[in-house]
Image 1 (cartoon, rainbow, N blue to C red):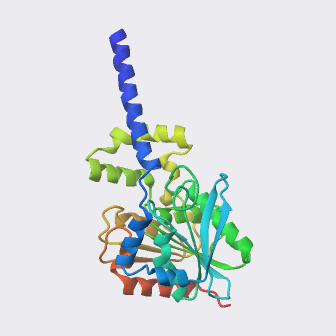
Image 2 (cartoon, one colour; image 1 turned 45 degrees about the vertical axis):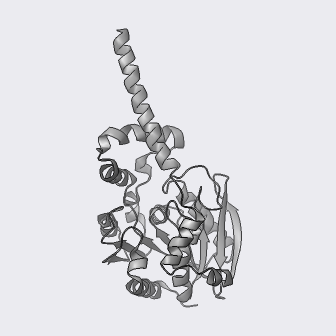
Image 3 (cartoon, rainbow, N blue to C red; image 1 turned 90 degrees about the horizontal axis):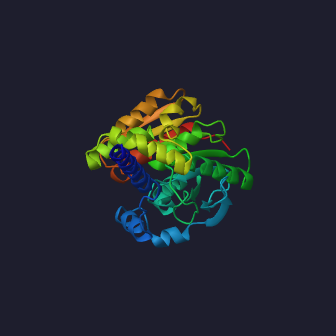
Length: 303
């Protein structure tokens, strides 16, 4: 009897250890350094320190609904109140958004960049892949409307985790933006994790995800099913432009196609022919700019 009890305890301990290890990898995913981000953006021709420093910008901080500080930057060269909020992906920070900032500034929009929780200059201890980040995005939207005007025209552009965050926010009852652009989002966190387990570790999801889900709920207060853009995308009434690269093997383009097909009302889809994950703009610059510019023209209100 004691041997069976010992074996059972050992198995439980092993499963719990797996759950802790896996959730640690999620919650505390390694972030890229400033140098890594700047080097990549410079190599792609998106970042020039002199140009960046010459932009009319002002930094700000605001509080999330969970009590930590969020850090952002306003770039407002245009007198009108038409703004784009940029949501970066996991492991990077708002400097990664500068390439998109230049695109929107060129199209006549003012820009707000900000750092997600646990990234850049923002506070917060863990990464939640959109669960807590969607509430932080709501705080940035509220700050923008309070500091400019409630009736401003507002769009949100998100990349990767930032795109999933954008969709989760857009599908909530609190959403107050006028349109959304989402570049390479995942449609469901559990399915995305299952894909990465198979590709990176050759492990079936049944071996890891059930216990990891229990541990995540206990540690962070949410489960995988709570981070599922596909479950809320049909609640989004405003226009959405979906973007993905056909060659993306990290988050599969089929996820964006699923999201596009389920979205009701005004929507557009652009599948870039080349480029890996979050590389649609870098590898298809002219076509990407044309698609985004045309979408902006279709949603822009006269001022």
